[in-house]
Every structure is written in C-alpha cells, then in structure tokens.
Image 1 (cartoon, rainbow, N blue to C red):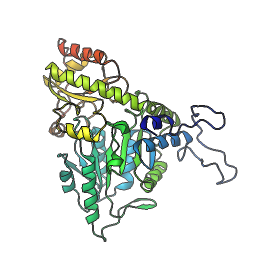
Image 2: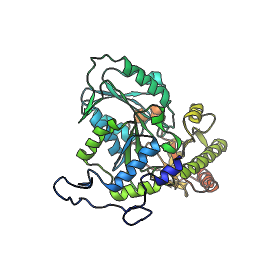
Image 3: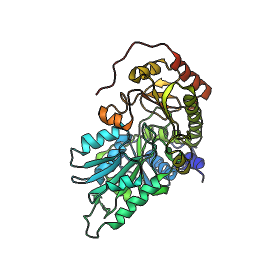
Image 4: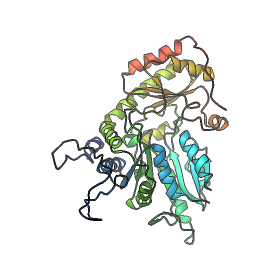
Length: 412
C-alpha cells in the first residue's frame, strides 16, 4: 500500500466483535485469565494493550521498520533507547545541533552515569566517523535539526558507521544492550525523524538502525497529545527496548494512542500543506528584507538544499528566522503575532512561534547555543495549515508594529 493508505488502514481493522469501523479504545488496566498464565495475549496494560499495539503497528509500517514501541513522551522514548544501549564507560557520538531536551538528557543524566557524549559540529559523515572509537555504541543525529534546519546525509553516515563496525576486531568487547540480546560489535545509528516524519523521509531505508519520534509533533498533529516512539529496522533490536518499556513503564496511555493514530491518518495530506505553506512563508520572509537571516531547506540558498531534494520528499513545515535587534527585536515581533501563537512545541495544524533561547533550548548554555547559531534574535516558526495569505499577513504586520515594553532576556 502507498503511504497515505497505510496511514489510514494499518492497525485500524474493523472491530471483529461489533463491526465498528473505528476500533474501540481499550482502557482496561488488567485482563481476565481463564487460568493462571492462560490468557488471550494480554495480561496487564503496562506490558501490552490492544490500542497501543495498533499504534505501534502503524508506526512500524510508516517508517518501513520491523517493530515499534510507543511511549508517554518523546523524551521517554529517547531514554528508552539510551538506557538499554549505553552503560558506564561507553560513548555516544551526536551531531551537536539538536533539541535542547535531548542535550540536557545526555549531559545532565547520562554523563553523570558514566557515559561520554561527544558532540560533532560538522555535519559530514567523515567528521562523525572521526569521533567514533572502540567505546562508541551509538551515533545520534537529527535531520533536519532543531532549530537550525541543518541536514545530514543519512546514507553516507550509515555507510561510514558500517565501515567502522566491520573493522572492529573479533575480540572487541561484547556490546550487550540488555536483557536477551547482544549487539556484538554493532554501532547503532539513531535518527530523530520528528521534523521530517516518515511522510517526507524514511531513515531506515537509508541505512539507519533506529528512528525516534516525538509523536507530540506532526504525527499527532493537533497539539492535543504528548507521546514518543521508537521504530527499529529489525525485530531483534526491539527486544531490549520492549524489555525496558515494560520494566520502566513509561508507556503511552490508550487514549493518547488513539489520538495519535487518529492524527496519523491525515499525516500525508497535512505534510503536503505544511510544506507548501512553509515554502511560501520562507520566500516571503526572504524577499521582505525584514529579517537578518531566513533558514529553510526548500530555499535554493540553503547549504544543504541539494541534499534536501535528494533525501526528502518535501522541505518540511519549519522556517527559522533571525530578527534584527536581537532579543528585543524577536520579543517585539512575537508579541505582535496574532495567527501565530507564541508557544512551545511544533507540528500542529495551527501555526506557532517559538523563541528557542528562552523556550526549547534554555537548558543549553549560552556559549554553546550561540556556537550553534541559536542567537537571541532567532525565532522558530512552525508553519501550520491555515491559508498562507493569512500567515504572511500576520508576519508582515508583526514586523511593522511599534515596539512593546521590554521583556527579560534569555538566561546566560
């Protein structure tokens, strides 16, 4: 089936008992057994739940993976990958331009547990490969990145990782990822695909081992549910993640699973609208002269525009702009917006404006933020699916407005 058909039908077979076209939400926490250990495949909803199973089947199908696991948030999903894979003394190599919450988890939690996160500031495969050594068990990338919209060549990085993996000595340490599984000399390549979604990009087909999502964003698509997901290329790799999912218990609730799967049904058509609107907004912003910088992979002057055309089926729904006047300029602009809401998150049908230095990346030290390009005047626009003319009119009037009272700037 094509993507749009899968999004509507996988995991959504009619209820066999009643014929209900939309399957019911199974809110039961426990399941009656005929005798101890004799049941219909379900015992306790932390371990398995029919509504969660349906969502997981859909997520795996859309990413072209073998299995998926659904979690209560994107950060819960990230932790559910890092925890079973990494142990004290291990290193992970990550492209440094990433979501602030991911950086915080790696720095403030896993580093304290004896893991060595190594950040690469060059997006090329060679730069990432150069930081990998015998202690490395995980390579982590976002593409496009949050909020700078840099792209990484997934296929090239996957080939570089596989080459290093093949060169490891036969007597290299056993890289066990937890219960019931050993990776041997494998190095996992994980891709945060939240910004692109499987509608625009499928990292597993390009050689990645694992895909991570904040399903809160485009997959849910309506700013009304929090969730996260892991999709793996092979079923064996899902074993320790499933073990951790059950042991730690950070699962998504049945109702959250239902909302996420309902959002997924329209993912294909929504992403087309997001991309079309974002390109119009980006072109207008570039031509307006009102911004110091406009970043969007669909613009011809984007450094990875050619890669975006090759690797993605659309340039996405995020446009990043840098306002003149630093924080005061950004604050004044955002306070004047009407259709765009000043809010955290992204990927909903409604347009949002975010100030990363104060909001999503506040946990990243100022020096590091500015090194990445996350300056005080930077604003991330999540372009929704409203009419593009209305979005542009809103941005235009916000640029032309008189200054408001000053607000406190971002923390150092």
